Amino acid sequence: MARWQPEAPGRLAAAALDLFEENGYENTTVIEIAERAGLTKSTFFRHFPDKREVLFGRATVHGLLVDGIASAPSAAGPLDAVAKALDALGQTYFTADRREFSSRRQAVLNSHTELRERDALKRIGLIASVTEALHRRGVPSPTAHVAAKLGMLVWEIAFDQWIDTDNGEDFGPLARQALADVRAAAAVR
Amino acid sequence: MARWQPEAPGRLAAAALDLFEENGYENTTVIEIAERAGLTKSTFFRHFPDKREVLFGRATVHGLLVDGIASAPSAAGPLDAVAKALDALGQTYFTADRREFSSRRQAVLNSHTELRERDALKRIGLIASVTEALHRRGVPSPTAHVAAKLGMLVWEIAFDQWIDTDNGEDFGPLARQALADVRAAAAVR
Image 1 (cartoon, each protein chain N blue to C red):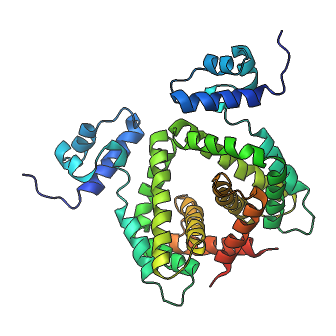
Image 2: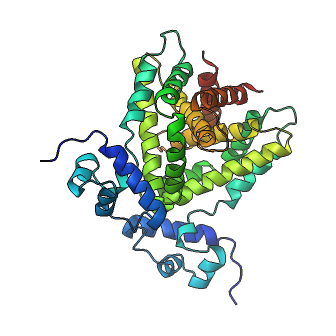
Image 3: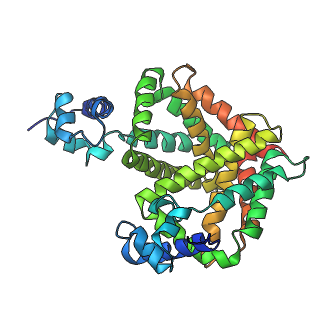
């Protein structure tokens, strides 16, 4: 029996990204991804249900966001709790060494319908989880749901700027600026 | 030569929606849509480039939004200008007699990847047009872009409630309430 390899998901994702860029998503098989990563097909399926999932090992992001919201100071309003969580994400996940991979990954997602669809579904799942995390802080609906959607908007604005590799800014400050822009746009009369 | 038929796009969309519901999007041909509408294939192609476009005759929505923003009082802030445009949309387009069609249409879009993709692209196009319309009012970036994205968020919240046929409320008031919710969520500290 092969042992559980904690670094396998990252290696499989990196190999998949290379192959999707080189040959296209449709023309790449799970066996090729496993081989490029120096792993077996059964190791692949121990970590991902199918080819479509290999670039979405984001349970981490999900958990970081939900934990970040739960651990925000109790006095923080809903959107500030989301901002704290985005900050934590910038410090532990969207770090400078991940920028190039994230940028290439997003380009591949954007150019393949099937992957873009999966990405959109993951974002909807994130909004639902953030809404629930806010409910657990006692934030009622519709505020919790609207704040979650605003948080995703802030994320998208900041993420698009962060993966622009000419930019060089860190995710945390970009997210804070995006939140300030959203607040300003909402407040203007 | 067949004459230009102003009511043809609506008849084709209604026929297509019926057939997509009955037989699925993939199993429906352009010829079948035209026949069900009592029109010819060539009339179909005079109005739509392909099957995928038949439910997206929304040049109207696009124009109503852009015109609504342009004609908002000059003292109105960017998001208030967008709100005025959504109000106009509710009065002239998302009217009660269109609710059932819109609801069925959205259900078909949501259940077909290809159509959901097209819907997402149309929304991105709308955000770009709203951003430009705000630029023409002298609203600088990033405020214009952020206000356009917030406007789309308000639209989505209101639209989802409006097509819920149990609800019975008009689009305009729902959009105003959604905007108030977004403003409140953004303002809370």
